[in-house]
Image (tube, rainbow over all chains, first blue to last red; front, side, top):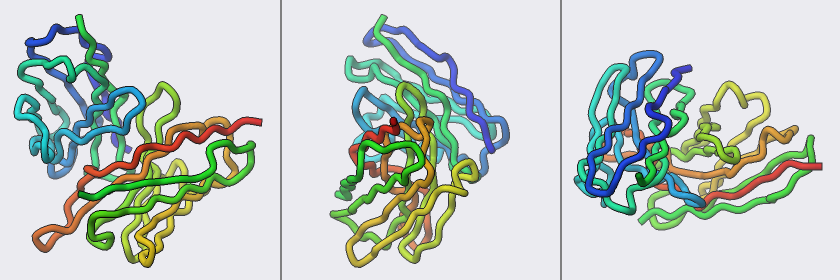
Amino acid sequence: EIVLTQSPATLSLSPGERATLSCGASQSISSSYLAWYQQKPGLAPRLLIYDASSRATGIPDRFSGSGSGTDFTLTISRLEPEDFAVYYCQQYGRSPYTFGQGTKLEIK
Amino acid sequence: QVQLQHWGAGLLNPSETLSLTCEVSGGSFSAYYWTWIRQPPGKGLEWIGEINHSGATNYNPSLKSRVTISVDTSKNQFSLKLTSVTAADTAVYYCASARRYTDGEWNYFFGYWGQGTQVTVSS
């Protein structure tokens, strides 16, 4: 199965700053079938980005995704207070679909 | 807007069978594949398997011997059964969309999620 490694495990930033989250895959992900989710305590994950760079409906344009092959990035251009949460990447290019271990974005 | 609501027993003894059902509303049930995903306490997400409206399934090999996902299109519902549970199966279980049929083709889309159901396995 494809193993996804997210870095850093924890990212401490202030509102207004730029956040860059990374997701590395153990094998190349076909068709850039990679998604990013945001999860807040007690809630289901919320789809932010699919197919590596497509924003889901209703997601603010400060969220952007990029990358291909084995290296992918989620960028939040200017952090808002509501952006502090845990972020997961997921690949669905090869079954079983797998998730990264998460990056916790916390307020500095 | 597609909405998912699921239910099932929240407390199980070891060796029992976990059973959850998810009901879909607000969209065309047959235009999606549906999936189950779980999250152990304090940990990340694990994909369990998926099903389409015809009943074709795809399971995670790590759980395949114990998992059955089924569908009831007359009720817009799909279900999860996991046999011989242990404490390691304690998790929040989510139902979600997995693919959708748009513009004449299937595309992956994990955009709709249920609220999550806590399942605890303990003697």
